[in-house]
Amino acid sequence: MKRKLEIAVISDVHLGTYGSHAPELIRYLKSIDPGILILNGDIIDIWQFNKKYFPKSHMLVINTLLKKALNGTKIYYLTGNHDDVLRRFADFTTGSISLRNQLELHLNGKKHLFFHGDVFDASVMYSPWLAKLGGKGYDFLIRINRVINRIRQRFGLANLSFAHQVKARVKKAVKYIQDFEMLAINYGADRGVDTVICGHIHQPSMREVEVRGRKINYLNSGDWLENLTALEYYGGDWHLYRYDDLDFDYLEQNQPVEDVFEPDYQEMEKRMQTNIPQRVIRRLMSQADES
Image 1: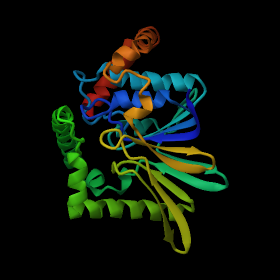
Image 2: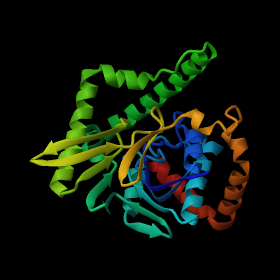
Image 3: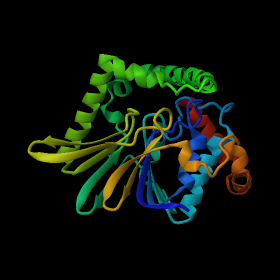
Image 4: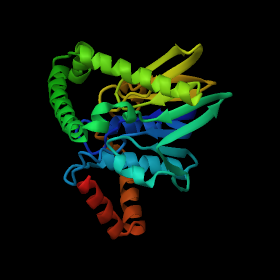
């Protein structure tokens, strides 16, 4: 049975990269029924988009999102830096799907501001080529990490996250995260909101900070590369969700998600071939290549 949520927030899925945990995300999405689903940036990694690598599981994420929109979930896609090519189409709405750069919602009389957060990243704003190079290196590190974790699992050892350990041990990385969070919090204070919700830095967080005599809640939805986290709003409060295979023991964990949801994939393929002109697909592909 699906869990009813008022709002769910995910970010930094990076579809189209080897590190993306698309199968786990599909299981999570199919387990919830949110009234509003906020995709807070970097859902599709256009920076590293490669026509040769976009497996079924990644397409199934898109299909699952579209089916939720058709079934009444309001979806807001907020642009990030890895999908910044979409910013030229901001304020576009079709059906239950809206494309935005930021989003403000009022919940229980409190103002909530949602945005990806890359505007506070100097490397993205002033050295985009360096940021893109770092993205490729990060994806390569994730791929190596997966291979090593498969070996560790065979010996009954727990998984390791190299990227998480690097961030935790390097002082500059820790300072970068702290600076990012304070910039986001101060930006929220300037906008007069009570809560700011970001992504971008792949660090799930929920904390309250006092700024200029008023309290600001800072939330970060984390990512679906390392942490596999989401933010959920229900019962008048926010909750941080962490994916756990044990939550989905009713599914055959050893069976590829592509096989489990093959009917969904076939339905999506048929719909795309019927409703989306090939010239539109070619145009989107060319824009991704140019970016």
